[in-house]
Amino acid sequence: MGKRYADAWSAVVDLLVANGVDTCFGLPGDDLELLRALDAAGLELVPCRDQRNAMYMATGYALQSGRLAVCALGKGPAVTHAATGLLEARESGAPVLVLAAGAPERRRGSGGFQELDQVAVAAPLVRWAHRVGHPDRVVPATVTALTRAMGPPAGPVYLEVPDDVRTAEILVTAERPTLPAPLAVEPAPGAPGPALAALRASRRPVVLVGGGMRHRNDGGVVERFAERLGAALFTTASGRGAVDERHPLFCGLAGLYAAAPARELWSSCDLVVSLAGRLEETAVEGGTPWPPVTVVQVNTDPGGLSAEFPGPRVLGDARHAVLGWSRALEEGGGDAAEGWVKRVADAREAMSREVEGELARAAALPEIRIAELLAALDATAAEPRVLVQENGLQDMWSYCFPFHAGGGSIVPSEQTPLGFGAAAAIGVKRAAPDHEVTAFVGDGAFLAARADIAVTAASHGGVLYVVLCNGGYGWLDAQRARLGLDADRHSFARPGAPPPAVDEGPGLHCRVLRDKAALTEEVRAARQFCSGGGTAVLMVPVAPDDIAPPIRDAEVVPQ
Image (cartoon, rainbow, N blue to C red; front, side):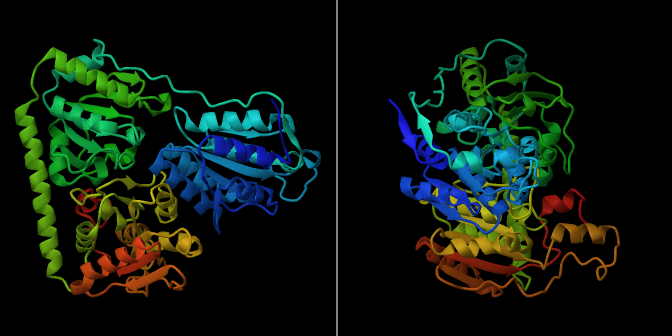
């Protein structure tokens, strides 16, 4: 049974619909046949003004939903402009299909309009990059792209449809290929071996959850494993949101972002179990170096298994590993180390006291402090909710436990591109319309996404932006100060400068917060505005010295 399509984009979109795609992000080129095909199929395009932001939105959508996201681009500079977003999607393991236009085959090598070897540009940044060379290859190439994007391991793919292919009629004479179905496997008890032996021998274990456990922790299997093992539970930055942050064994983020009591736990542990993480630099370095202990690593991606640490490395699904190990530990008997569990509880209590002390110090100061702002956000938030973050000097406050992310968190990868969280929040809201979505960003990041935030506010809103205003780039300014460079000659931040201007229009509400007494009510009113589908922007001027304690303790900024 055959099917005839008027052009390539119609065939591609039909496959997207058949595989559950309902939204596309992007800034198409001047050939709008793709837009026509999307309209005909009932798929919505979230229009963007910047190709990087389009990629960030698609990445946020994919990370939040666990489903395929689609990003549409033009050709030539559109692809190079999106390259930073491709890098972020790859490092985050986000399943994103990039659909790009391309110069026609007959013009290759002629110096034609926007001609570029786009596959060569994209290939290092994606799981798979391909240019469709003939109309007969449109459907098979699209199915391959969908398969490669979802993995495992998941990640972005790049599919280029050149002009002479996109305008051609597509005839499909055979049955349309489907995506591979995953084989459901009942996890067996963990087989005897070095990994299980290390788990049984440990008396002071730590479980470190990476970003690959996102959407793989149904039923709280990781928390139950930590309970059975009696382990302190941490996440990497990318893994935040994969576990319940209110669990009594959860101690926050590892490495650079860990509070002092949590670092003390790390310094005395005797085993680290890394689940679906890459052991990235910020997770393993910070105020306290890792102790020389065995590290058990599990990852479906061989590239995610670090060779820098001693201990067993397991290539496989971390969810299955956790279930199997939990069953083996139950069958083998033995109890969790009660003394270690007590130390975990004591560390959590100490971290809570530190926050209380921070809030008490903040209360004595005239200006709004970031700890107070986070406390107000936590007090006014409903469930379910998602916190979308950046990675600047002062918005890193939101990485610090016990300020809760609640229903989840989306953070940039180790690449930390400027503006990721500000734009990704729009994709997150599209993926989770029933969630309260708060973007906690700096003013530099907000400016990078401001045009797209304004464009999407009326029809794709619902996001609360909390913008920390220090007049630029706080991290760079802190490093300038550390080296004693002149602030006038090297001006990376302008404390006290007016917050970025935002033109209030349909669906967009903006306030500058300066009154500490009105803080909670202002946040509550902004959340109410967002609940009606609008976008609210709260600008909060912040002092240069308002830096999260773990970052100060790590001595990466001047004291």
